[in-house]
Length: 371
Image (cartoon, rainbow, N blue to C red):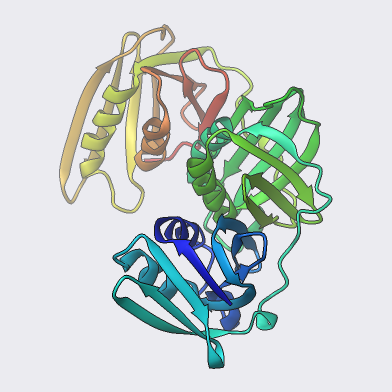
């Protein structure tokens, strides 16, 4: 196997798979990346941890076709450190991978490709074009509330559903908070309705990275128990979580006559200040809602007290006192863009609903606390 490849192009392809190559598995092969040179002038760069697979190709001048696997992290570190524009790659005896760039030479120990896990194929997948930018925003506004409790696997990912008519929905919850988003994401008309699936956190993170790289022009489909996302010369396979997502609709408050509108950044900054003295265990902050104003406070017997008042709009009900984990509310305010956010409240021990003022696409539910 011999070829010449652009260093920057090779480095980008290897950077893409760094979140996939595994160093924790007892299966040594999946810490490697698969390199496969073909006579059509393409170098395949693929990696898998058996749950997430990246399979891509870049242009190269192929002198001798072949295939090899080599430590993915070491190869990436070497390639991005090289001084020239092009890399000469060749495989010699004992599966040694020789890399030459200008006056620099590395030799890495590789392994035969037949020891590598069989990679999935996208052949036969019915792909649907989607707007990758809309899909990425859905991910960004839901991934932060995915549960990290491994004893509850059905909460360890984002629920993904095609609603039909070009609209997609994503939902996540960790039992204390919930995030839901819907977007029109069909790039060429309708997206067929599809029952919901759960995409694991790691797969969602890798999908977000992919979308950040390729932009709007992507397509998705399903293969067995995998979500398949394709872009030019690149396919991502994500093994789905085989579990039932809880009925999240029961958690979302149906209606509220007590709504307050507040400046998002002012609310976020106030929470940051007030939570300095909040309990390090609960991060609880007390919120009093009055007509025309909101009072945020924390009271820590070991540290002291903090209090701040903010102006609000739209609230004309009785005084309401509620407490939230400040970190949960800050996470919401930090990923939104709107100037103002809306709080819909019912009573002190009922969930609070947060959304951008004037935008129905996203909603966030936070369970209250007892202080």
